[in-house]
Length: 346
Ligand code: CP3
Image 1 (cartoon, helix red, strand yellow):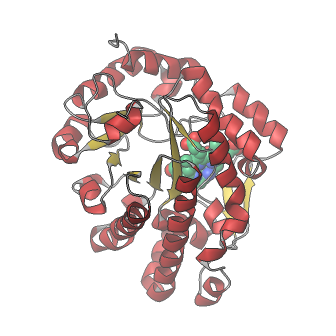
Image 2 (cartoon, rainbow, N blue to C red):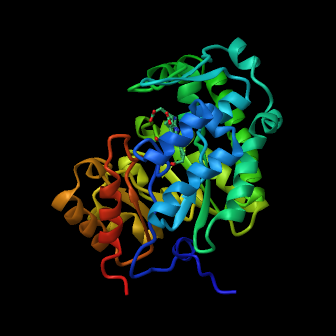
């Protein structure tokens, strides 16, 4: 049967007159219905591990806006928790984890094969979604890339410059690399289970890829993404992979091709005209409106949305933000963005 889902057609390399749209963090605190369900769950992690409520918040932006894709509601830091790290969220500040700064700390982690006990509710969320999503909506699963996940496991929190992770990488390379390997292995198993449960696409979030330079970028951002992609494609032929080496700059060039990903997600520091010329030549790109437009709206939002759509109109393109929508965004601006992307749809 010919593929009818717009997002999957685009990932297969087709150029569509109106690009499919979804948005990073589309289920989130800018939506009153999300805040209500989150309050019902009690806290963020309880929401992630409650399949009915996690499926509900995943569906909310689909009902409200009719996005072309739904992204599983979960978090990249569930993998560290499943590997045995302590994890909690401090309201208004962000995640906190027990730290890994030595071979002894690393030795306390569980083997990758043990993660499913903690993560099984996530697979149930995926199963519910694959039953309940409208037939035209693509289901995206995801995980953090090993480097980004490691930055949180090493520092025990988000850091502006990933300093503690860079320090471990330089001072105890063996422990650092063992940690990356453990996360890589766990990520392959985790994404495989999401695919078996019904995810049609998986996205690998390397939010801090931009702080790796030169040979370190190749070793710790590109190589793990390549390994994960190859393993998933060997096990699940036809699965689509979106890679997001955020703020990789010139390292974006050739990344998708070398990794074997079907789509390269672009952050909003990348100029769309430059990207059309240097990145979209290799295939599908995703992005890359600055999330700030969801706060400020108006003519600037419309102009910039049109500029991005036009820049990428020569090839396969998935419209998205360059990073997650923020809690202070106005839900009406999301509708304005969607209407602008679809303005010439017949
Ligand atoms: O995109 C989606 O809608 C799917 C769900 C999703 C979440 N986190 C839910 C979430 C996805 C794909 C993520 C990925 C994620 N999580 C990343 C990579 C993408 C990126 O943003 O760079 C990272 C680095 C994390 C780790 C994380 N989770 C941080 C640093 C924080 C705190 C910051 C914040 O916004 O509060 C989270 C919390 C989080 N993850 C929220 C949501 C909706 C907010 C929690 C809440 O409801 O209080």
